[in-house]
Image: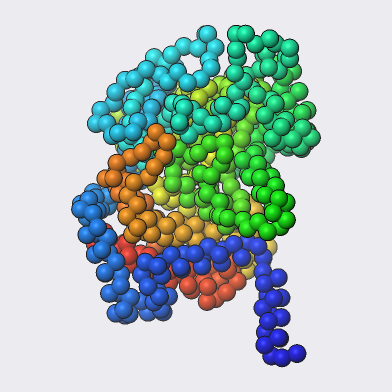
Amino acid sequence: MSVDDDRSGDAHNEAADTPKHTIALRSALEDCENGLKELLGERICVQKQDGDPVLKRRVEEWAARILSSAREVAPTAVDVRPIAKSINQQRKDGLHDFMCEWNGPPQCPVDTVRIVDSRRSEHIPVPPIDSTVVDDNDSIPEHEVVSLSPLEFKRQYVYRNIPAIVRGLDCKGNCFHPITQLWRNVYKEDHEATDECTSERSINDDWFIENVGRDTTLQIRMPSQAETLDEEGRSEECETTDVTMEQWIDYCRGATSKGDHLYLKDWHLVQYLEMRAKEKVEKEKDGAYTCDRQSVDDSPLYSVPFIFGPDVLNSFLLRYFGGDFRFTYWGPQGSSTALHSDVLHTFSWSFNVVGEKEWIFYPPTFNLADNFSDIQYTGETISFSLTQREGDAVFVPSGWRHEVRNVRETISINHNWFTAASVDKVWECLLIESKAVEKEAGAWGIRDCSAKERMLRGCIGLDVTTFFLAVLSSLVDELRMLSLGCFSIEAPALATDCTTCIWERLFNIRRLSHQLHAVRMDCSLELIHRLNSGLMSVDLGQKCLLLEDAARCACEHIFNENT
């Protein structure tokens, strides 16, 4: 055997021994490198970037081209910079204003919003969207429905971390219209009811039997004996039981409003359907099928509304790991979710395909250092309730504890997600959990960074290396889109004008770049050691930092500042 054969064998054995998680991280790093090389040239990975005149000139030329490509870029960057830097103050102001406007129970202080194509300068009362099948006793909300553009919605609710109800996303041509047509039962006056399901149920059970499978096993949550939270404010795990799809439908048909109820929660239905579709294609092509990268918006059942994106978390996980935080919830009348806050300090959104939910929200605890002396409220517990009707989407801000009860049998789509606006909140959660892991690892005498990262993933489903690369990947994508002149985003009934999209793209770039720099400046994390262990390579860990340097340098030139 030749030396070359020996090397080939060693490389094969190394690849076979490399964990799938590491392979996915390396793939993400390679894409980040290729994306930045496309923008800034081949010298982005030189060890001393500050002293490289070739790279410096290439970055300056790239930034000059961007700034001259559209006259809106430079003034928009000036407008974006203070807003992107003051996101924490915006959250404090948002909470302060929210509490000041709330007169206390039983008034619901949450706005109901309709998203419109064009930007509006005023809040305009509009009729509620008549796009759902509702009971005769359903009443129209007394408060007005506010018409906002996508960016206005983000700046008023997402950036300020304030809850909202969004109506009309199930209208024809909109994001959730396809799934409502498939999952809702349509009643016809001339329909001869020969089956209990089609005559009385609002859910199209046949779709689930045909597309999920009659005998497919589902993991159902048992009712909690005590509604308690763990030390980090998350709901404690409850027991589960396995049933088939057919058994679950039969259970829901016979469930009453009394007693404890089973609940189908955190169901990765979309991922399951995507896997089945791929398997079918692979069989049809006799194994010749090549799996293309997934996009978070490629679900055949629905598309993610523009107001709930761009989703840093799910787009990265789907692209490189095949995992996600996209869930389906299905519960009979009276089923519920106990008091909790969402994983990773993420945002979440919930769309009611069928049914009705009652939410009880608990605003974040006030910091005594903040001036909330002008807020008047009564009672020991500050909470309020809202009703989510069929066809409504609820935006759940980061850190807002809540509990949910199904007023009638309900199926909803729920995503946990984070954007550039909330990336610091997710990092905050990672820091808290990392300290807890460090303490536990220290008690066991564990010093290996790879072991700590595995412990962190096992606890919250994310580790520092994955977070760093997810944010870097999103930043590179934003820079590439900016370079390509992608200033408009097409979405059904949610298109925005050129200036709006430039504003948000620059906002995302500034926020993501700033967060990566903050991660690097945190000396307590041993970041380079974590990157090295996650990628199983000292060279690749260093390359992560060099790519971040190059991306930050490009951002500084766009905003004419030091990050």
